[in-house]
Length: 483
View 1 (tube, rainbow, N blue to C red):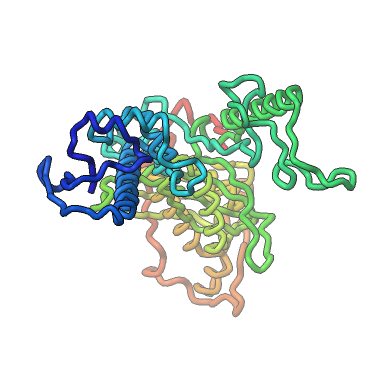
View 2 (view 1 turned 180 degrees about the vertical axis):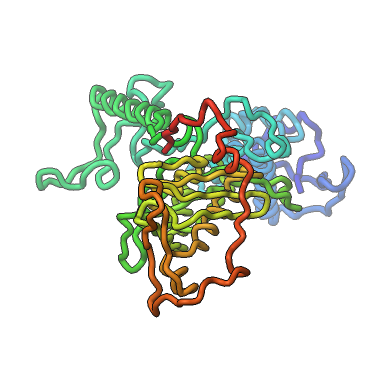
Protein backbone atom coordinates (compact mmCIF):
# COMPACT_ATOMS: atom_id res chain seq x y z
CA UNK A 1 0.00 0.00 0.00
CA UNK A 2 1.29 3.47 -0.88
CA UNK A 3 0.31 6.47 1.35
CA UNK A 4 0.15 10.06 0.23
CA UNK A 5 -1.39 13.19 1.89
CA UNK A 6 -4.79 14.37 0.79
CA UNK A 7 -3.75 18.01 0.49
CA UNK A 8 -2.97 17.65 -3.22
CA UNK A 9 0.15 17.67 -5.44
CA UNK A 10 1.33 21.05 -4.16
CA UNK A 11 1.80 19.73 -0.67
CA UNK A 12 4.23 17.09 -1.90
CA UNK A 13 6.87 19.73 -2.63
CA UNK A 14 7.26 20.55 1.04
CA UNK A 15 8.55 17.10 2.11
CA UNK A 16 10.79 14.50 0.58
CA UNK A 17 10.99 10.75 0.90
CA UNK A 18 13.24 11.03 3.96
CA UNK A 19 10.91 13.37 5.87
CA UNK A 20 7.68 12.42 7.51
CA UNK A 21 4.41 13.19 5.71
CA UNK A 22 1.97 15.58 7.43
CA UNK A 23 -0.56 13.97 9.71
CA UNK A 24 -4.20 14.97 9.97
CA UNK A 25 -7.65 13.69 10.71
CA UNK A 26 -8.02 12.36 7.20
CA UNK A 27 -5.43 10.23 5.43
CA UNK A 28 -5.95 9.04 1.91
CA UNK A 29 -5.07 5.35 1.63
CA UNK A 30 -4.45 4.36 -1.94
CA UNK A 31 -4.39 0.68 -2.76
CA UNK A 32 -3.25 -0.78 -6.05
CA UNK A 33 -6.17 -3.19 -6.05
CA UNK A 34 -8.83 -0.56 -5.13
CA UNK A 35 -10.21 2.10 -7.51
CA UNK A 36 -8.31 5.43 -7.49
CA UNK A 37 -8.73 7.28 -5.19
CA UNK A 38 -10.20 5.45 -2.22
CA UNK A 39 -10.58 7.53 0.95
CA UNK A 40 -10.51 6.19 4.50
CA UNK A 41 -11.17 8.50 7.47
CA UNK A 42 -8.90 7.84 10.43
CA UNK A 43 -9.77 8.94 13.95
CA UNK A 44 -7.89 11.76 15.61
CA UNK A 45 -4.36 10.89 16.66
CA UNK A 46 -3.18 12.11 20.07
CA UNK A 47 -0.02 14.28 20.05
CA UNK A 48 1.83 11.81 22.26
CA UNK A 49 1.45 9.04 19.66
CA UNK A 50 2.23 11.21 16.65
CA UNK A 51 6.02 10.39 16.50
CA UNK A 52 5.38 6.64 16.50
CA UNK A 53 2.75 6.91 13.80
CA UNK A 54 5.07 9.19 11.81
CA UNK A 55 7.89 6.62 11.92
CA UNK A 56 5.53 3.86 10.91
CA UNK A 57 4.21 5.80 7.94
CA UNK A 58 7.72 6.80 6.89
CA UNK A 59 8.87 3.17 6.90
CA UNK A 60 5.82 2.10 4.90
CA UNK A 61 6.45 4.87 2.38
CA UNK A 62 10.10 3.88 1.95
CA UNK A 63 9.17 0.21 1.62
CA UNK A 64 6.62 1.00 -1.08
CA UNK A 65 9.18 3.06 -3.01
CA UNK A 66 11.79 0.31 -2.75
CA UNK A 67 9.29 -2.34 -3.87
CA UNK A 68 8.29 -0.27 -6.89
CA UNK A 69 11.94 0.35 -7.77
CA UNK A 70 12.75 -3.34 -7.45
CA UNK A 71 9.87 -4.29 -9.72
CA UNK A 72 11.00 -1.84 -12.40
CA UNK A 73 14.60 -3.02 -12.01
CA UNK A 74 13.49 -6.57 -12.74
CA UNK A 75 11.61 -5.40 -15.81
CA UNK A 76 14.45 -3.20 -17.12
CA UNK A 77 17.21 -5.59 -15.89
CA UNK A 78 19.18 -2.71 -14.35
CA UNK A 79 20.95 -2.74 -10.97
CA UNK A 80 19.67 0.24 -8.97
CA UNK A 81 21.25 1.65 -5.79
CA UNK A 82 18.13 2.52 -3.82
CA UNK A 83 15.39 4.94 -4.71
CA UNK A 84 17.81 7.76 -5.39
CA UNK A 85 19.38 5.99 -8.35
CA UNK A 86 15.94 4.98 -9.57
CA UNK A 87 14.83 8.61 -9.47
CA UNK A 88 17.31 9.33 -12.24
CA UNK A 89 15.19 7.16 -14.55
CA UNK A 90 12.46 9.78 -14.50
CA UNK A 91 10.28 8.40 -11.71
CA UNK A 92 8.36 6.10 -14.01
CA UNK A 93 7.23 3.94 -11.11
CA UNK A 94 5.92 6.87 -8.98
CA UNK A 95 2.40 8.22 -9.21
CA UNK A 96 3.31 11.94 -9.33
CA UNK A 97 6.22 13.68 -11.15
CA UNK A 98 6.81 15.86 -8.07
CA UNK A 99 8.32 12.89 -6.23
CA UNK A 100 11.27 12.79 -8.60
CA UNK A 101 12.70 16.17 -7.62
CA UNK A 102 13.42 15.40 -3.94
CA UNK A 103 14.65 11.93 -4.87
CA UNK A 104 17.45 13.40 -6.95
CA UNK A 105 18.73 15.68 -4.19
CA UNK A 106 18.27 13.48 -1.16
CA UNK A 107 18.38 9.69 -1.70
CA UNK A 108 16.26 7.58 0.57
CA UNK A 109 18.85 4.87 1.11
CA UNK A 110 22.58 5.22 1.37
CA UNK A 111 25.06 3.11 -0.59
CA UNK A 112 26.25 1.44 2.58
CA UNK A 113 22.81 -0.04 3.23
CA UNK A 114 22.97 -3.75 2.23
CA UNK A 115 19.33 -3.66 1.13
CA UNK A 116 20.13 -1.00 -1.49
CA UNK A 117 22.09 -3.37 -3.73
CA UNK A 118 20.47 -6.30 -5.45
CA UNK A 119 22.27 -8.93 -7.54
CA UNK A 120 21.02 -9.19 -11.11
CA UNK A 121 21.77 -11.88 -13.69
CA UNK A 122 21.91 -10.68 -17.27
CA UNK A 123 20.37 -13.64 -19.08
CA UNK A 124 19.65 -13.65 -22.78
CA UNK A 125 19.11 -16.01 -25.69
CA UNK A 126 22.84 -16.73 -26.01
CA UNK A 127 23.27 -17.53 -22.31
CA UNK A 128 20.45 -20.08 -22.24
CA UNK A 129 21.67 -22.27 -25.13
CA UNK A 130 24.76 -24.45 -25.17
CA UNK A 131 27.42 -24.33 -27.86
CA UNK A 132 26.06 -27.51 -29.47
CA UNK A 133 22.58 -26.00 -29.69
CA UNK A 134 23.92 -22.83 -31.32
CA UNK A 135 26.03 -24.79 -33.82
CA UNK A 136 23.05 -27.00 -34.61
CA UNK A 137 21.06 -23.94 -35.58
CA UNK A 138 23.88 -22.56 -37.74
CA UNK A 139 24.76 -25.77 -39.57
CA UNK A 140 21.17 -26.95 -40.10
CA UNK A 141 22.21 -30.60 -40.10
CA UNK A 142 18.72 -31.79 -39.20
CA UNK A 143 15.36 -31.12 -40.76
CA UNK A 144 13.13 -32.35 -43.51
CA UNK A 145 15.20 -30.60 -46.17
CA UNK A 146 18.40 -32.34 -45.12
CA UNK A 147 16.74 -35.74 -44.93
CA UNK A 148 15.34 -35.32 -48.43
CA UNK A 149 18.71 -34.34 -49.89
CA UNK A 150 18.20 -30.59 -50.19
CA UNK A 151 21.27 -28.41 -50.58
CA UNK A 152 23.73 -31.20 -51.37
CA UNK A 153 25.76 -29.02 -53.72
CA UNK A 154 25.88 -25.97 -51.48
CA UNK A 155 29.03 -25.13 -49.59
CA UNK A 156 28.32 -26.27 -46.07
CA UNK A 157 29.69 -24.63 -42.97
CA UNK A 158 32.10 -26.54 -40.79
CA UNK A 159 31.73 -26.71 -37.04
CA UNK A 160 34.65 -25.12 -35.21
CA UNK A 161 35.79 -25.44 -31.65
CA UNK A 162 36.03 -21.83 -30.50
CA UNK A 163 37.69 -22.88 -27.25
CA UNK A 164 40.95 -23.62 -29.07
CA UNK A 165 43.61 -21.22 -27.84
CA UNK A 166 41.57 -19.95 -24.90
CA UNK A 167 43.60 -19.99 -21.68
CA UNK A 168 42.18 -19.28 -18.24
CA UNK A 169 43.35 -15.90 -17.04
CA UNK A 170 44.40 -14.65 -20.47
CA UNK A 171 42.65 -11.74 -22.15
CA UNK A 172 42.56 -10.96 -25.85
CA UNK A 173 43.64 -8.00 -27.91
CA UNK A 174 46.04 -5.17 -27.30
CA UNK A 175 46.38 -3.30 -24.02
CA UNK A 176 46.12 0.05 -25.78
CA UNK A 177 43.17 -0.81 -28.02
CA UNK A 178 39.87 -0.40 -26.11
CA UNK A 179 37.94 -2.23 -28.85
CA UNK A 180 39.86 -5.50 -28.63
CA UNK A 181 40.82 -5.25 -24.95
CA UNK A 182 38.54 -3.20 -22.67
CA UNK A 183 40.14 -1.41 -19.71
CA UNK A 184 40.85 -3.75 -16.86
CA UNK A 185 41.13 -6.87 -19.02
CA UNK A 186 44.03 -8.64 -20.66
CA UNK A 187 47.69 -8.99 -19.82
CA UNK A 188 47.25 -9.95 -16.18
CA UNK A 189 49.47 -12.58 -14.59
CA UNK A 190 47.69 -14.70 -12.00
CA UNK A 191 50.12 -16.88 -10.01
CA UNK A 192 48.93 -20.45 -10.15
CA UNK A 193 46.55 -19.81 -13.07
CA UNK A 194 48.49 -18.47 -16.05
CA UNK A 195 51.81 -17.84 -14.33
CA UNK A 196 54.06 -19.94 -12.05
CA UNK A 197 53.61 -19.53 -8.32
CA UNK A 198 57.36 -19.66 -7.66
CA UNK A 199 60.04 -18.13 -9.86
CA UNK A 200 63.69 -18.53 -8.87
CA UNK A 201 62.54 -19.53 -5.39
CA UNK A 202 60.54 -16.32 -4.96
CA UNK A 203 56.79 -16.25 -4.46
CA UNK A 204 55.22 -14.36 -7.35
CA UNK A 205 52.58 -11.70 -6.83
CA UNK A 206 49.79 -10.38 -9.01
CA UNK A 207 51.18 -8.35 -11.94
CA UNK A 208 50.50 -7.34 -15.52
CA UNK A 209 52.44 -7.78 -18.74
CA UNK A 210 53.88 -4.99 -20.75
CA UNK A 211 52.54 -3.84 -24.09
CA UNK A 212 55.25 -5.55 -26.17
CA UNK A 213 54.89 -8.87 -24.37
CA UNK A 214 51.11 -8.80 -24.70
CA UNK A 215 51.36 -8.07 -28.45
CA UNK A 216 53.71 -11.03 -28.85
CA UNK A 217 51.27 -13.25 -26.95
CA UNK A 218 48.38 -12.17 -29.15
CA UNK A 219 50.38 -12.73 -32.36
CA UNK A 220 51.29 -16.24 -31.20
CA UNK A 221 47.63 -17.06 -30.59
CA UNK A 222 46.64 -15.83 -34.06
CA UNK A 223 49.43 -17.87 -35.63
CA UNK A 224 48.26 -21.03 -33.84
CA UNK A 225 44.69 -20.53 -35.02
CA UNK A 226 45.83 -20.09 -38.61
CA UNK A 227 47.81 -23.33 -38.36
CA UNK A 228 44.73 -25.17 -37.06
CA UNK A 229 42.65 -23.93 -39.99
CA UNK A 230 45.41 -24.89 -42.42
CA UNK A 231 45.74 -28.39 -40.97
CA UNK A 232 41.99 -28.89 -41.26
CA UNK A 233 42.06 -28.00 -44.97
CA UNK A 234 45.03 -30.24 -45.82
CA UNK A 235 43.92 -33.63 -47.15
CA UNK A 236 46.07 -36.62 -46.36
CA UNK A 237 47.14 -38.38 -49.54
CA UNK A 238 45.97 -41.96 -49.43
CA UNK A 239 46.96 -44.97 -51.46
CA UNK A 240 45.21 -45.25 -54.80
CA UNK A 241 42.58 -47.96 -55.09
CA UNK A 242 40.73 -49.12 -58.18
CA UNK A 243 40.02 -45.53 -59.22
CA UNK A 244 41.10 -42.15 -58.01
CA UNK A 245 38.00 -41.14 -56.06
CA UNK A 246 36.55 -44.43 -54.79
CA UNK A 247 37.36 -46.35 -51.62
CA UNK A 248 37.43 -49.69 -53.43
CA UNK A 249 40.81 -51.45 -53.27
CA UNK A 250 42.33 -49.11 -50.67
CA UNK A 251 44.40 -50.74 -47.93
CA UNK A 252 43.43 -50.11 -44.31
CA UNK A 253 46.56 -51.67 -42.87
CA UNK A 254 46.86 -54.51 -40.43
CA UNK A 255 44.08 -55.23 -37.92
CA UNK A 256 44.52 -53.92 -34.40
CA UNK A 257 46.08 -56.21 -31.77
CA UNK A 258 43.70 -58.42 -29.82
CA UNK A 259 42.83 -58.12 -26.13
CA UNK A 260 45.18 -60.98 -25.20
CA UNK A 261 48.19 -59.46 -26.95
CA UNK A 262 47.91 -61.35 -30.26
CA UNK A 263 49.12 -59.41 -33.28
CA UNK A 264 48.25 -59.69 -36.97
CA UNK A 265 51.33 -58.27 -38.63
CA UNK A 266 51.10 -60.63 -41.63
CA UNK A 267 47.52 -59.64 -42.44
CA UNK A 268 46.33 -56.86 -44.69
CA UNK A 269 42.85 -55.43 -45.13
CA UNK A 270 41.26 -54.02 -48.27
CA UNK A 271 38.07 -52.06 -48.79
CA UNK A 272 35.71 -53.73 -51.23
CA UNK A 273 32.80 -51.31 -51.15
CA UNK A 274 31.66 -48.17 -49.33
CA UNK A 275 28.10 -47.02 -49.92
CA UNK A 276 25.31 -45.04 -48.31
CA UNK A 277 22.25 -46.94 -47.15
CA UNK A 278 18.95 -45.57 -45.91
CA UNK A 279 16.39 -46.87 -43.46
CA UNK A 280 12.90 -45.44 -43.10
CA UNK A 281 12.05 -45.04 -39.41
CA UNK A 282 8.92 -43.70 -37.76
CA UNK A 283 10.79 -41.28 -35.50
CA UNK A 284 13.54 -39.89 -37.74
CA UNK A 285 12.13 -40.61 -41.18
CA UNK A 286 14.71 -41.36 -43.87
CA UNK A 287 17.79 -42.22 -41.79
CA UNK A 288 21.13 -42.31 -43.60
CA UNK A 289 24.09 -44.49 -42.67
CA UNK A 290 27.35 -45.61 -44.27
CA UNK A 291 28.05 -49.28 -45.00
CA UNK A 292 31.60 -50.54 -45.46
CA UNK A 293 32.57 -53.96 -46.87
CA UNK A 294 36.10 -55.10 -45.94
CA UNK A 295 38.12 -58.29 -46.50
CA UNK A 296 41.34 -59.33 -44.74
CA UNK A 297 44.00 -61.90 -45.56
CA UNK A 298 47.64 -62.84 -45.04
CA UNK A 299 48.47 -63.90 -48.61
CA UNK A 300 49.08 -67.48 -47.49
CA UNK A 301 45.65 -69.08 -47.69
CA UNK A 302 43.96 -67.35 -44.74
CA UNK A 303 41.31 -64.78 -45.51
CA UNK A 304 38.69 -63.06 -43.43
CA UNK A 305 35.03 -63.34 -44.16
CA UNK A 306 33.45 -60.14 -45.36
CA UNK A 307 32.13 -57.95 -42.56
CA UNK A 308 30.21 -54.70 -42.37
CA UNK A 309 30.66 -51.51 -40.45
CA UNK A 310 27.82 -48.99 -40.36
CA UNK A 311 27.86 -45.41 -39.16
CA UNK A 312 25.04 -42.87 -38.91
CA UNK A 313 27.50 -39.96 -38.99
CA UNK A 314 28.72 -38.49 -42.23
CA UNK A 315 32.34 -38.58 -43.36
CA UNK A 316 33.19 -41.49 -41.04
CA UNK A 317 33.76 -44.16 -43.68
CA UNK A 318 37.38 -44.72 -42.68
CA UNK A 319 36.43 -45.08 -39.02
CA UNK A 320 33.86 -47.75 -39.81
CA UNK A 321 36.28 -49.44 -42.19
CA UNK A 322 38.77 -49.80 -39.35
CA UNK A 323 36.02 -51.25 -37.17
CA UNK A 324 35.05 -53.72 -39.92
CA UNK A 325 38.60 -55.00 -40.42
CA UNK A 326 38.89 -55.73 -36.69
CA UNK A 327 35.67 -57.75 -36.88
CA UNK A 328 36.67 -59.59 -40.07
CA UNK A 329 39.81 -60.99 -38.42
CA UNK A 330 37.55 -63.13 -36.19
CA UNK A 331 35.91 -64.88 -39.18
CA UNK A 332 38.78 -66.49 -41.09
CA UNK A 333 38.65 -69.06 -43.88
CA UNK A 334 41.54 -71.25 -44.90
CA UNK A 335 41.54 -71.66 -48.68
CA UNK A 336 43.39 -74.65 -50.15
CA UNK A 337 45.65 -73.81 -53.12
CA UNK A 338 47.23 -76.08 -55.69
CA UNK A 339 51.01 -75.59 -55.57
CA UNK A 340 50.34 -72.34 -53.68
CA UNK A 341 49.37 -70.43 -56.82
CA UNK A 342 45.94 -71.54 -58.15
CA UNK A 343 42.77 -73.46 -57.34
CA UNK A 344 42.47 -77.26 -57.51
CA UNK A 345 39.74 -77.46 -60.15
CA UNK A 346 37.18 -75.38 -62.04
CA UNK A 347 34.38 -74.04 -59.87
CA UNK A 348 30.92 -72.68 -60.65
CA UNK A 349 29.48 -70.79 -57.69
CA UNK A 350 26.10 -69.06 -57.57
CA UNK A 351 24.81 -66.65 -54.95
CA UNK A 352 21.38 -65.17 -55.57
CA UNK A 353 21.47 -63.62 -59.07
CA UNK A 354 25.26 -63.77 -59.42
CA UNK A 355 27.15 -66.69 -60.95
CA UNK A 356 30.94 -66.83 -60.77
CA UNK A 357 32.79 -69.28 -63.02
CA UNK A 358 36.39 -69.88 -61.90
CA UNK A 359 38.98 -71.81 -63.89
CA UNK A 360 42.29 -73.25 -62.84
CA UNK A 361 45.28 -71.83 -64.74
CA UNK A 362 48.95 -72.59 -65.15
CA UNK A 363 51.81 -70.80 -63.45
CA UNK A 364 52.32 -67.31 -64.81
CA UNK A 365 48.80 -66.86 -66.20
CA UNK A 366 47.88 -64.16 -63.71
CA UNK A 367 44.50 -63.06 -62.46
CA UNK A 368 42.00 -62.35 -65.23
CA UNK A 369 38.97 -61.58 -63.08
CA UNK A 370 36.70 -58.88 -61.76
CA UNK A 371 38.62 -56.22 -59.83
CA UNK A 372 36.96 -57.19 -56.55
CA UNK A 373 37.88 -60.84 -57.20
CA UNK A 374 41.48 -59.82 -57.97
CA UNK A 375 41.74 -57.92 -54.68
CA UNK A 376 40.41 -60.83 -52.62
CA UNK A 377 42.55 -63.40 -54.47
CA UNK A 378 45.69 -61.44 -53.65
CA UNK A 379 44.67 -61.36 -49.99
CA UNK A 380 44.24 -65.15 -50.13
CA UNK A 381 47.42 -65.83 -52.08
CA UNK A 382 45.97 -67.04 -55.40
CA UNK A 383 48.18 -65.89 -58.26
CA UNK A 384 46.75 -67.59 -61.38
CA UNK A 385 43.02 -67.89 -62.06
CA UNK A 386 40.38 -66.95 -64.56
CA UNK A 387 36.95 -65.85 -63.34
CA UNK A 388 33.87 -64.73 -65.21
CA UNK A 389 30.94 -62.96 -63.56
CA UNK A 390 27.51 -63.69 -64.99
CA UNK A 391 24.32 -62.01 -63.89
CA UNK A 392 24.31 -59.35 -61.21
CA UNK A 393 27.60 -57.56 -60.54
CA UNK A 394 26.67 -56.63 -56.98
CA UNK A 395 29.93 -56.59 -55.03
CA UNK A 396 28.42 -58.29 -52.01
CA UNK A 397 27.05 -61.13 -54.15
CA UNK A 398 30.37 -61.50 -55.99
CA UNK A 399 32.32 -61.68 -52.74
CA UNK A 400 30.00 -64.24 -51.18
CA UNK A 401 29.99 -66.38 -54.33
CA UNK A 402 33.81 -66.31 -54.37
CA UNK A 403 34.17 -67.38 -50.73
CA UNK A 404 31.51 -70.08 -51.03
CA UNK A 405 33.11 -71.50 -54.16
CA UNK A 406 36.66 -71.51 -52.79
CA UNK A 407 35.54 -73.04 -49.50
CA UNK A 408 33.70 -75.87 -51.29
CA UNK A 409 36.55 -76.98 -53.58
CA UNK A 410 37.90 -80.51 -53.14
CA UNK A 411 41.63 -81.24 -52.98
CA UNK A 412 43.27 -83.96 -55.06
CA UNK A 413 44.06 -86.06 -52.01
CA UNK A 414 40.49 -85.87 -50.75
CA UNK A 415 39.20 -86.89 -54.18
CA UNK A 416 41.63 -89.85 -54.33
CA UNK A 417 40.59 -91.08 -50.88
CA UNK A 418 36.93 -90.69 -51.77
CA UNK A 419 37.09 -92.60 -55.07
CA UNK A 420 39.98 -94.91 -54.06
CA UNK A 421 41.55 -94.16 -57.42
CA UNK A 422 44.70 -92.39 -58.55
CA UNK A 423 44.22 -88.79 -59.63
CA UNK A 424 46.22 -87.93 -62.75
CA UNK A 425 46.72 -84.70 -64.67
CA UNK A 426 47.30 -84.23 -68.38
CA UNK A 427 49.40 -81.31 -69.50
CA UNK A 428 49.95 -79.98 -72.96
CA UNK A 429 53.72 -80.13 -72.67
CA UNK A 430 53.56 -83.78 -71.50
CA UNK A 431 51.39 -85.01 -74.39
CA UNK A 432 49.51 -88.23 -73.58
CA UNK A 433 51.73 -89.06 -70.60
CA UNK A 434 49.69 -88.52 -67.40
CA UNK A 435 51.12 -87.08 -64.23
CA UNK A 436 49.96 -88.64 -60.95
CA UNK A 437 49.06 -85.84 -58.54
CA UNK A 438 47.43 -87.89 -55.72
CA UNK A 439 47.12 -91.52 -54.57
CA UNK A 440 44.61 -93.00 -52.10
CA UNK A 441 46.00 -93.78 -48.66
CA UNK A 442 44.41 -97.28 -48.60
CA UNK A 443 45.52 -98.12 -52.12
CA UNK A 444 43.70 -97.98 -55.43
CA UNK A 445 40.89 -100.43 -56.15
CA UNK A 446 40.99 -102.71 -59.19
CA UNK A 447 37.37 -102.39 -60.38
CA UNK A 448 36.72 -99.47 -62.69
CA UNK A 449 34.46 -96.51 -61.94
CA UNK A 450 30.74 -97.11 -62.37
CA UNK A 451 29.38 -95.27 -65.36
CA UNK A 452 26.65 -93.59 -63.32
CA UNK A 453 29.27 -92.15 -60.96
CA UNK A 454 31.18 -90.41 -63.73
CA UNK A 455 30.27 -86.70 -63.47
CA UNK A 456 28.49 -85.28 -66.48
CA UNK A 457 30.16 -81.91 -66.83
CA UNK A 458 28.06 -79.38 -68.67
CA UNK A 459 30.11 -77.43 -71.18
CA UNK A 460 29.68 -73.72 -71.75
CA UNK A 461 29.07 -72.70 -75.32
CA UNK A 462 31.64 -69.91 -75.05
CA UNK A 463 34.28 -72.46 -74.06
CA UNK A 464 33.36 -74.66 -77.01
CA UNK A 465 33.66 -71.71 -79.39
CA UNK A 466 37.05 -70.82 -77.98
CA UNK A 467 38.26 -74.43 -78.23
CA UNK A 468 37.13 -74.77 -81.84
CA UNK A 469 38.58 -71.43 -82.86
CA UNK A 470 35.20 -69.93 -83.67
CA UNK A 471 35.51 -67.15 -81.12
CA UNK A 472 37.98 -64.31 -81.62
CA UNK A 473 38.33 -60.87 -80.08
CA UNK A 474 40.76 -58.00 -80.54
CA UNK A 475 41.09 -57.83 -76.75
CA UNK A 476 41.84 -61.53 -76.28
CA UNK A 477 45.62 -61.08 -75.99
CA UNK A 478 45.58 -57.93 -73.86
CA UNK A 479 46.81 -58.37 -70.29
CA UNK A 480 45.32 -56.16 -67.62
CA UNK A 481 47.28 -55.11 -64.57
CA UNK A 482 44.89 -54.18 -61.79
CA UNK A 483 45.72 -54.33 -58.14
